[in-house]
Figure (cartoon, rainbow, N blue to C red):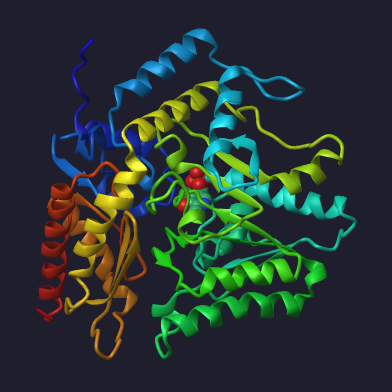
Length: 456
Ligand SMILES: *Cc1c(COP(=O)(O)O)cnc(C)c1O
């Protein structure tokens, strides 16, 4: 069943006419045409003209087991043939949903054994937000409604997701920021704490949480939400002192802790969840991207036994989606998890790929354009500055990080930019040779931009 591939120009024209893109400037799209990606295998993707790229971003932080795994195609096909869909409302369930809920419970940190399903990271965060508020209502504390989150955090693009997130442009678009959300300083040493040690700054950033709780009154705070390592907001691992103190503060003030593990879940940090890497004990843990390695849209919200006991005593849970626990997506997730276990992918990230990746990343630490190289597991970021010694930044109009990304496309690698930060999040199956290739090419691109800026 081969068909003649459509010409890139024809696709771009139809795309421009009819396809409204997320996170894209329509004017720039109309001028330049979209980049059309047609095929993927392993860590590589091909555009419609046959150019090959090493995908240093695993799609959008999600294609963890790599592109083109036939086993998932087979499992999804047989699920569709057997039962394409049935809902989980009104006391129904399908075997596939049940198996996945049980499987996820076996992987999550202790005590997180009750799984609500959704189809995206955003809706998982909506679910968490509704559940924590409902929980406090049931506990007879109806004023505990506000959720605290971090500046620069990304929690999705629904109204709740964008409100939880700390991105001003998202708050502004459509006046999205709702009442009941507070944003505090993140544990982002390079931006907020360079005048002190990382350890001291970690404590200061955690103190910002307690200050916010005290300012609003603990009686008004439902929960604190954070990514174990901030992802899209700049790949920001917290100093070691941060999470232990955050955990203490939440406990002390009766504030629930929501771990948004949409990126950090399923091996990205070298453990099944970032909560293991940082010894976090959340009341709710959200996962999405790596759950199916992007093969099908699915998310899950794992709720603690204690919380679920309270929710269970509160009557019907008036929440859910037509596609909560979609059997086809559950089948994709189950096969993804089977592959991760059989091929010991989490162990591979922890013992081989992660350490190699972090070593290569640190080789950039003394590059004349790099202020900080940071990361964990197979997450990495380079903070680009005009002068690392003085900490002098580039003007945003210089678009230095975006220019590096554009050079990456010209040189066969995919990176991502936010502010003046270059981000990396390759498929977890990346070999050490491919890691070398990724960073060799990244260095070439950064050098080129440094030359354009008269720095090299
Ligand atoms: C991607 C992401 C989301 C949103 O997930 P969608 O599936 O795009 O809705 C939420 N939280 C984090 C940490 C993410 O990285």
